[in-house]
Image (cartoon, rainbow, N blue to C red; front, top):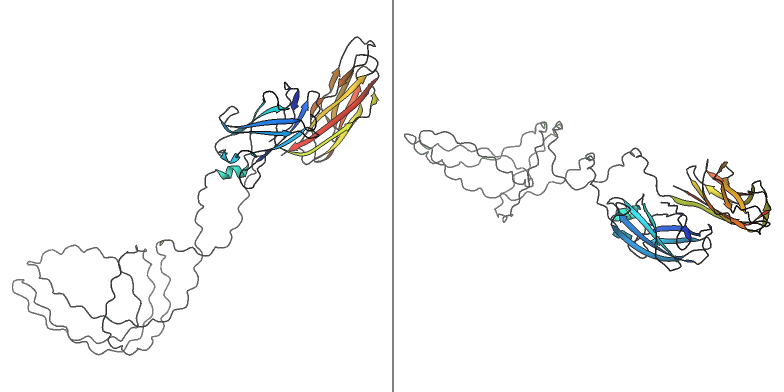
Amino acid sequence: MTKQINTLFKTAFTLLLAVIAGAIFAQAPAQMNYQAVVRNTAGNPVADGTPVSLKFTIRDLTSTGTAVYTETIATTANQFGLVNVQIGSSNNLGTVNWGNGAKYLQVEVQLNGAGAYTDMGASQLISVPYALYAANSNVGPAGPTGPAGLQGPTGAAGNTGATGPTGNNGDTGPTGATGVGGGATGPTGATGLTGPTGNNGTNGNNGDTGPTGPTGATGAGGGNTGPTGPTGNTGAAGTTGVIGNTGPTGPTGAQGATGVGITGPTGVGVAGPTGPQGPQGIQGNQGAQGVQGAQGPQGAQGNNGATGPTGPQGPTGAAGAFQIKDFQTSLNTNPYNHSSSYSIAVQVTVNVTSNTDKILVATSGYSQQSTNDDACTEYYVANTTDGTQGEMIRSGLFGDGGNNGGTGSTLAGNFVLTAASAGTKTIVLYVRECLGADSQVLSARITATVIGN
């Protein structure tokens, strides 16, 4: 941000140049640079070592809003009248909620440690330093889940586990009594949850089914069903038949909720003798791929997929704060006579990086009449490289034209020049005598500052 100031103080000085705000991306507290040039009423920079006290106030939403930050910094001007300070060096800028509306910086100045502070006004901070805004902004929403990666190849089949012991068969419960008159069949109860699947043991040979015991006699008149006859002995195991082709895989059912239960104690049963291993059946053909089942619960995160293509470039953001790109000054103290035609008093060369840059020019100096008191000097500045110039300024006294003693006039002025293109530019101070009398330029200074985004 650049703010040009040219206001007369009670203590007779002006603050000419700029606020330059830039976030320093380091550990808290963050800071913003502030640079300015202090000049007297004649347009000359104040003397080297002049004490300058700056009071900064950050106001919320408007230039007269609530003060959310204050800081006072004492410094001294250098040989060019420049002062350089860091806002936040003695207070914590991180306490300002930069994301909550506009912020305005108010500057107040005191010279030589005396008198009240002079209010220079408040200007909006257009670009919030990213480090300060990020320190107290809300976390953005999580991005959408990326598409599932391709299914990896099926791993090799593991070895068949050892056959676990077969538990004893429980006793068959008694058959309930048959209702009289054949009442209506009750509704089918809901299917219970499927318990966890145990590990597959090695299949034994199927034995022959023993003979069915005799059916007990049916009681007269629809009475109770007689008891079930005893189960016959299990016949010898038959040989395993050839395994048929595998049928198509059915659709995968939805993932059931995982039941939570307490594992009971492991039953201890007497292991029966293992039957002889049947011959390996012929491998069946692979069944057709079943229909995709419903999405199950999210598993563990897989490996990162390949990087997707780069998205289109977003629109260009708003222009950032102004910054000083070049600063040059030149002083000529060799007296010379100047006539009614314009001649060069002093010049300076600066570097411009964009045709949108501005060249701020300040001039100062002294021109003297040696034969009368009707001093009159006209002067202007020009960008001779691109052919642009500032307005003409006339200074001095206008009297009766008599030879009443020599007087002088100042060459103090402020100008704004433009650049037609980037590159090196020569900035010149031209001076001439208004009345055509014998006049001398005793000193002349030109200071050029290039600012831009």
